[in-house]
Structures are given as structure tokens and as C-alpha cells.
Length: 300
Image 1 (cartoon, helix red, strand yellow):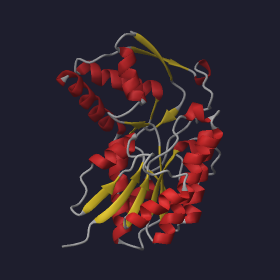
Image 2 (cartoon, rainbow, N blue to C red):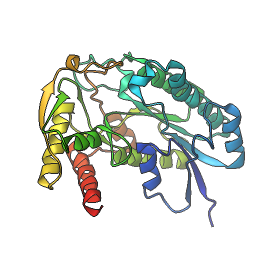
Image 3 (cartoon, helix red, strand yellow):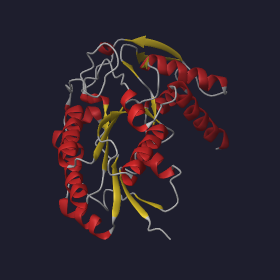
């Protein structure tokens, strides 16, 4: 009987982490998703203890300080989680001779490009969150040559707090919602991100020559936050769920502590070329999530 394949997942309680744990992995794969109390990524000794206890075959770091606006006032906490944590993991995985797969973000870009961002475009974070995630990318790429950084954006799922769930909650008691209409991006299913991470991780475990570097994954197509809200409400209304009229507004009418990129559209061509991962359209992904949430509501 083959030895078990141990994979460490950090951020197991987040949207992507929960979908990684729910995914159908091959037989023999054992997933480890310790809590922050069980594994402190900012503590080198904690990480070394975990690696000494289990012969991990790969690490997927989906954990992060994701409170974008709070990060503007919590610089040290953001960099501890998003830069130092990945740096510690890069050291530990390099020394163990195993791959590290790091989840990153569209916020590494300034959003001024016209068209889809490719992996080699110049980076220019607008705030602390993006800067800390970029520092994490650099730590991973320089700290472990056998690594993949996977940037994603506009993450949605049935789990935790996200834009889709917020819209459905607000529509329950508000007939009209004002939603930003001048930021463009690609709504993306956490389940689809998890599937992409699974494919990359298993390939890197099986093949030491598997492609490394920076990649991007989002669902196909693009819209605005207001366009996404309209789609959510059309799907919800068709199934008897909450709906509202969407009034598009400018970003300037909804000021936030952290500036958001106006353009978060990411190209996934490199990932399709190197890993044969072809994202499905964002509308199909959103429909799946809306239907699951409404089914849960009906069952309750």
C-alpha cells in the first residue's frame, strides 16, 4: 500500500480553504488544516514543529489578513500574516524539498491598465493589503524556487462573508441598493479556485519539473460590482429569493479607507497553457452559489 500523501493547508477556515477541504482528492491524500492556534505562521518554531511532526508533500497557503480597509490601520498585522507567514513557509518548504503554492490577489496591481492584466505586468499596490500580499509573493518566489503564486480576485462562495451573500442579505429589506459601477473585474468561485489549486498541487507533487512562477485564476468574462449585483438578483428572483433594484454609483460616492483597483481583470491564458486549467464563465459560477444558498434557506 502506498504511503499517504500529506498536504498542509493554511487558512482552512477561509472561503478557499473550506472549498479545498471539501474537494474530492485522490485516495491516499491526507489534508491537514490546523487552526491559527495550532499553527502560528508568524512563529518559525511553530512551523518547524509542524514540519518535524508530519512529512508534508506540499503546502497550500490560502490564509491571509484579508480585511482590506482594516489593513490601512493594521500595517504590522497585515505584513505579519501576508508577508512574514509566506516567508516562513518558503524557508520550511525549501528545506523540506517540497512545493509551496501561495494564493495572492489582484490588489498587487494599481488598476490603471486598459484590458486584462497578465502575470508580467508592472505591479503597483494602492494600499497596505496589496503591498503586504505582494511582499508575500516575493518572499515565496525568492524563498522557494519550487513555488507557484496564484493570483485571484472577487472571490465568492456559500461560505463566510462575501459580496454575493451581502447583496442577498441587504435585498431582504431594501428595495433599492446603490452599488459601485466603475470598478471592473471577474467574479470568481472559491470552489473553482480550490479546484485549480488542487490540480497545480498534485502536479507539483508528482512532477519535480512542473511549471513554477506566478499564475492567475479567475472565472471567465468580466463585469462591474453593479453588474454582478444585478446578476445575483436576477438569479435569486427567478428562484423566489430576495431581489432589489441596483443603482450604479461611482467609487467616489462610496469612499473607503483603502483604494480599490478600477480594473481587476486578470488573464488566465498562462495557467491554461501550462496546467490545462480553463475557467468556466463567471455567470455559471455565480448561479451555482446563488442556487446553493437559496436551497439552504429553503431547507432551513
